[in-house]
Length: 171
Image: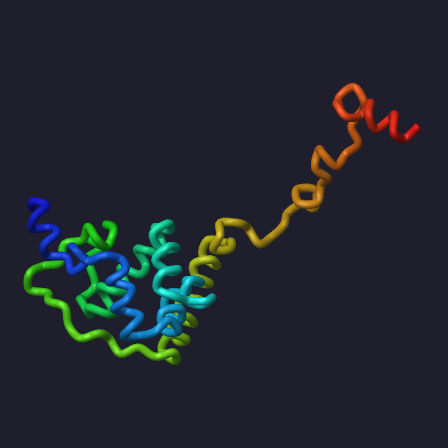
């Protein structure tokens, strides 16, 4: 499949990030966007311009917004697992799939979705035996976490370049 067909079939083709964000903010508002996407630029002093600035710098957040645009706002069927591995702007939307009306979203639905995601994350963590950040919750040895750092241990004058000046000031 050539690139021309690939990009023509994607609703994000030729649409700027500002236009995407403006459309979904005008339809849903910042409160719904924060509730569904959990990106702080939609919560703390939200504006289109400040959000654009953040999204341009942060690839994961931009892709999250673009996925929301495609599958909630444009109401397209979910991408195949093969297409899902690609960034949203590189996905091919089959010709028979046309954008529909924006999905009806509510804060209550967002809360249920957040709880469902938290439950799945907790199940995955339990299966792995650790937290979702790749750290183990059990601390096997106190020394591993509470040992003093090398800098906090007193260093001899022959190793510490500032020891001579400190010794003079103490005298």
